[in-house]
Structures are given as structure tokens and as C-alpha cells.
Image (cartoon, rainbow, N blue to C red; front, side, top):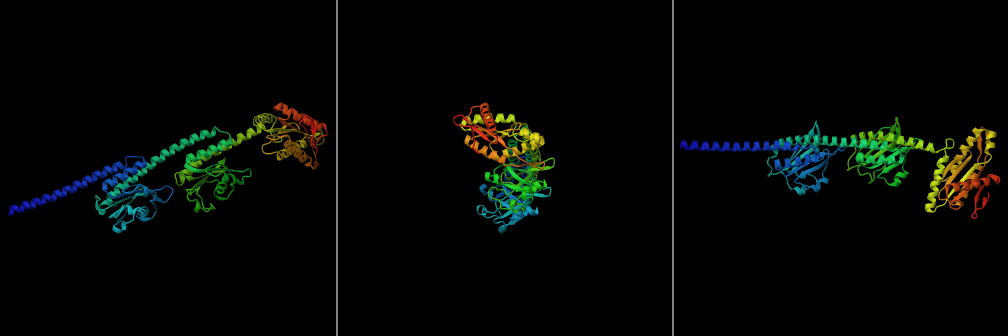
Length: 536
């Protein structure tokens, strides 16, 4: 009997040892799989691949019912579901948690794991609980890196799970630590690549800006480049008017034409006005709650986030650059503001260079005394207008104007007084002309006005108004009230001439007739080619 008892005890002992060995082997296998999972989680620098690796390895290793990974959206306080196993992907757009909301938000806010068991685990994943059914436990483990939470890893289990909630938490913690490091590294890598691409784009844009000197082309290039560089759907470029009191939109992308045309902002008013007044950038994450924004944002402002930076040259503000609607539905962050400020420096210099080039071009084709177009530009413009008129069968008219007795005026009152009269007459001519008309100083005391798409009758009416305006003007010079008059010759193409030379010659003949006929008059050719004087 004693031998049998000893054998039974030995068998029992062996059975216990076998059970212990199997338990140890199970733990060894689990730890080996854990090490393999940790290795795979950190094996990629692609954020999307990291998310996949985390979910696949955690879900498989723990035989979880549901595994979900939430990451904080940059620039916001919301956690977004970036992936899951055991839930339908179509629910992903519903799963946003604010800091402190539910066990997901609470785990993120506290930076410590939260375990929910039994009824407490019910409905933890808002909006999809019915799809998941009942659960035994849920562990929400924060992803913490450098003492800051960047997300939450959630694991849900039931009787089929590999471990109970009592023993699973340390494993989830290790996996979450690996996931946090992998996410951080992937984001750093993506940020580095994005920064490199942005700097390359910035260099490319800078080279393009320096090669363009036409102001309109520069402004459009700036707006197009900003939307590509920053990733924004809407961009507006505002420049200060000559008084430096108001901002007007010069070029915009993503805004209705009516908004562009009617928007005028006083310096100091609203967001753009504040930026212009202080010369500092302004990053607004929520437009509607910001005191500078005077109305609720409409459907155009889908993200409610706006970034506004000044355009400065030599420390002086010349305009403001605004972007909003971060793509895709994101929020602008400090990195965006820094990049846009760097770009704005280049953009402002390009605008200034285009302004200077425009001014040089203007000076090259304008008369220094009167500010009117000079003789060479007049000849080129008349040639072009005649060709255009003949091509499209539109009449082109020409007025030649001469100041009556101007030599006598200069002899009597001096050349300085004569120069003042020339300047004042130029202002009258410009004020009487239409936007499309071209007013030029032909030479000495002679002027010329090209009237595109204007028949002779219209040109004679315009000449009559101009002659009368000069006649009624008093020139107050050095305390003297002086008056001058003008004589005008009118000719039209194709009625009187077919070429530039012929049209100038016919208008000159009409001018000579007006001066010979007593001055302060208007002459023209009638339908029979006979010179006639317009009745006053």
C-alpha cells in the first residue's frame, strides 16, 4: 500500500510540474509574441503603417474582441479614431472624443489607464455599441511620450480573450509604450519630409517670383503658391491703398467675385486690419469664438480656422495675406504660421519689385511735367487701336488739341506759369476722358486724345465738353486769375483715314482750321470731306 501511495503522489507531483511547465511555456510564448509585436510595431516610419501594425499585433496577440486606436488631432483637443479591429470602418467618422469625454477622453486627460468591467464597459465606444454586443472588460491605455499623451489604445475583451482584465493591463501598457514611440517617430519623419518638401517648394516659388515683374502675375502667383504650400482652399491677398488707411483684396482664390469686389477693411478693423496695424501674424483656431470676427462663419469657412500674416518691406506693412479652410478639414498650427511668414517675406519683396518695375515702365512712357503719355507711346497706342478697330469694324477717333496763344502767355507770365497751366490742363483732360481713352502730350503745347470704339459724333460731343471745361477754368497763379482756351481738331477712322499717319494728318488739318477760324473752336471733316467748324 505504501508503494502505491508513493506512486500516486509522484504522479500528482509530475502532473503539477507538467501544468507548471505548460504555464511557463505559455508565458514564454506570450512574451516571445509580445517582443515580436513590439518589434513589428516600431518597424515602420509611415504613420499609416504604424497604425496598421499596432492594431494587427495587439488584436492578434491578445485575441481581443475589439481594438481601437485614437490619436489627438493636431491643433485641436479632440481624439480621432484612426483605425480599429472588430468594428466596421464606416463608423470611424463618428468616433471623435473630446478630452475628458468617456473612458477614452478620461484616459487621455489623466495620462493613466482606465479599466471598465461589466456594465461599466457597456457603450464605451459611442455610436457603435449595438454593433459590438456585450463585453466583459475594456482597457483604455494612454499613449504617453515625453510625459505628454498623444493618443489612447483601447482593448475590449470577453471570455474568448487570451488574458483576463487583471493580467492584460501590463501587456497593453508595454504595447502602448511601443505604439507611442512608433507614432512619435513616424510623425517626426513625416514632418521632416513635409518640411523638406515645403522648403523645396518655397525655393521653387521664390525663384519663380524673382523672375516675374508684372504685378498682376506676381499677385496671382503668390495666391496660387500659398494654397499649394500651406494646403488651404481659400486665400486672399490684400494691399493697402495709397492713403495707407484701407485694405482691399487684389487677388483671391476660393472667394466669390462679389466678396472680392466689395471688401474694404479699415486698418485696425477686424482680423486683417489688426494684422496690418500691428505688423504681426494672427493664428485663429476658431473664428466664431474670436472677438475680432464679427459674424458667424458661413459654409465657406468649413474649418473655422484662419491664418493672417503681414506683408512687410523694410519693416513697413504693404498688405496682408489670409488663408483658411485647411485641407483636409484640419486646423492651422504654429508651423503653418512660421512657414507662411517665411513665404510672406519673399512675396512682399516680389510685390515691391513689381511695383518698382511698374513705376519705371510708367515713367518711361509718361511725360514728366504733365504725367500724360508721351509721344512715342501715343504713336504705338494709336497704331494698335486703329488695327483693332479695323479688324472688329469699330470706329476710332482722334482729338488734336492746341493751347491758344500759348507763346504769348509764356512771354507775359513766364514759363513757370506756363508749366502750371500745362499741368492743370492735363488734369482737366484726364478728368474729361473715359477710362479707355488715351490722353497724351503730343509735344510743346499740343495734346492728343485717342477715343477707341467712338464714332465722330461721340468724339465731337466729348471735344465740346472739353473745350467748354477749359474755357470756364480759372488758373490762380501767383495771385493772378488767368484764363486760356484751346482749339481742337477731330478726325475718325475709317471715315476720314485708314492709317495712323493719315488720321494724325487729318486731325492736324482740322486743328489748323480751328486756329485759323478764330481759335477756341472745334473743326472736323463732314461726310463729303469738307472742313466744318462745330457750332458752340
